[in-house]
Amino acid sequence: MPRAGLTPSTVVREAARLADEVGYERLTLAALAGRLGVALPSLYKHVKGADALIQKLAALAVDELADAMTSAAAGRAGADGLRAVATAWRDYARRHPGRYPAAQRVPDPADPEHVAAGRRALDTVYAILRGYGLTGDAAVDAARLFRSAVHGFITLEAAGGFGLPRGIDRSFDQLVAALDTAYRDWGAR
Image 1 (cartoon, rainbow, N blue to C red):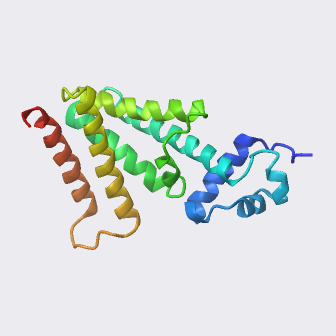
Image 2: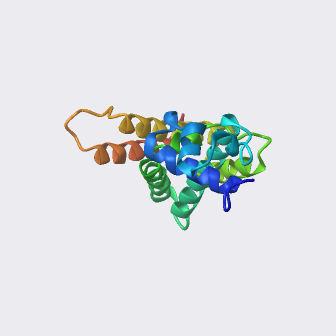
Image 3: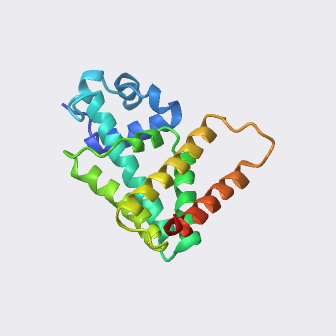
């Protein structure tokens, strides 16, 4: 008999909280079962196993990240929109250091909610890029540049990889400004 109130959704949300506390790489079914006060085999009534849990965590994280990005982009364009989306992305990673790595998984085609969340996040970036006149293959390349730059910065920052005596926020602002310049000059190449 499943524990009262325990559903697949509550299991995934608790896994997300646990990942934020202990780290994505330390999230295990055993730790989650302990956290929920259930025996490990009881979790299998709610998730099919570790891979299924990580998949659902990825879908949740991408959905939350897409929400943050779309809210930040609303009513903004150009450099202002670019900065707002990049900042929302960074803020999400800071608030959710355990679930953020899960958001890097490519959406599973068998999970329509994960695919839809991934599409919303990408569409938000594409909308910003359209403001620079970037569509089609150029938008794909520009979106990959955006993701690589922002994710790379976030990952290095989280790992304590910036040791030079200069404000990290200022460096992030310069990164976004450089992306803005690159996108404005994209067609000249």
